[in-house]
Structure formats: C-alpha cells, structure tokens
Image (cartoon, rainbow, N blue to C red; front, side):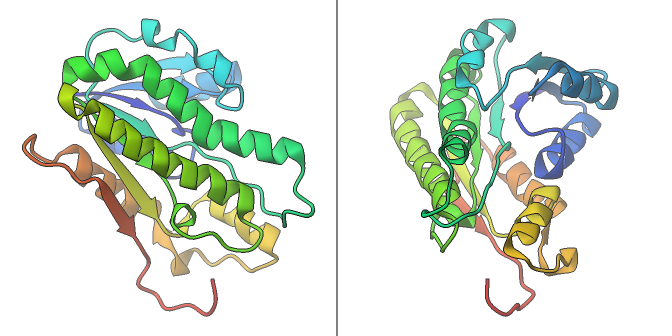
Length: 232
C-alpha cells in the first residue's frame, strides 16, 4: 500500500486526486486548513489521516513531519490560491497570501516530509500552472508564486537525486474547477467548463507520474486543452 501526503483535497484537482487514490486502496495523509475543513475531509475519506495546518501561515507546518509515520511514496502539492489585479492595485495581503500558500508552504512542507520521502524513495509532485511558465497582465502575484515554485522544484530535484527522491512539476492550463470559476468572475468573463481541461484529466497526468517505474522520471509535463478559444 502506497502512502501519499496531499494538500488541496477539499475541492478541484486535489479532491479528484484524493478520491482516485483512496478508491485504489492507497493510504492518504490529507492536510486541512481548519478544524471544520478537517471534519469534512474525515467524512469524505474516513480511512485517511487528516492533519490541520494553514498554508497561509507556513509556520503551522513546523513539526508536521513528526505526525506522519513511516515512509512516504509521494508528496502532492495541489493546493493554491489566486487573486487577480494589476500591480498598481494589488494589496499587500494578496501578495503575501499567494506567496505563502503557493510557494513558501510547499517548501516548508517538503522540508518536513523529506526524511519520509527519502526512506520511501518517493516522488514530490508540484501542481504548478501555465502561469508558472508565462505571466500575463493582472497575474503578477500568482505567476510570481508559480515561477518561484518552478525554481523550488528544480533546486529540489538537483539536491535529492542522490537520495532517490524524484521531483516532477505538472503545468495544467486552465482547468474546470471552482478556482477557475473565481478567475472568470474576476476577469468579468462567462464561465464555460466545457472549454477547459477537466480535473480528472489532470489527475490522470499526475497518476502517470506517480506510477512511472523507478528507473525513470518526468521532470516537467504541460497539460493543455484542445478546444480552440479566442484570447486567453
């Protein structure tokens, strides 16, 4: 039985991924932002271990590694937040929250779990974004956090190869999730889920990375929709 530590399991890609892993009998360690969120996850995943830590406050992750027993086969960074605005109007709070949730907390959580990952010769998967490859107007803070996440993954990959820990980054383009609905609302656009990648498609890509034989690694993979669309 494989053990996976997962953030973002309350909705979107994270929820879909947690469900597939649970259905195939794997052991889950899920992070919840609050006690209320933890209760919801325990109801949805009764066999999972649920730990409470607020990714918007990276200090709450300190010591979390001691709460996980045994080796870990994968650490899956799926949680993320987004707030769109031009640099001229972006509030300090929004900068700090996106950098904390999308970049600093993944770094701290990875540090906490590395002994377990080394023991299991596991895989770290960063679910990034196409915004981690190219930044557009109004996306400065989110893109900066995702560009940083790409750098974190590249550095970690170079550092951990000698310990047998593989590191992969998945770059989904726009995906039909509640976060994408929020983005469309901020952009003043009509949301049409059929134009975007499904969460299940991204999950299939992540599973391919997780299930790759131990003699190979996929450092980076980009997932894009095939439906043509005007603009971005």
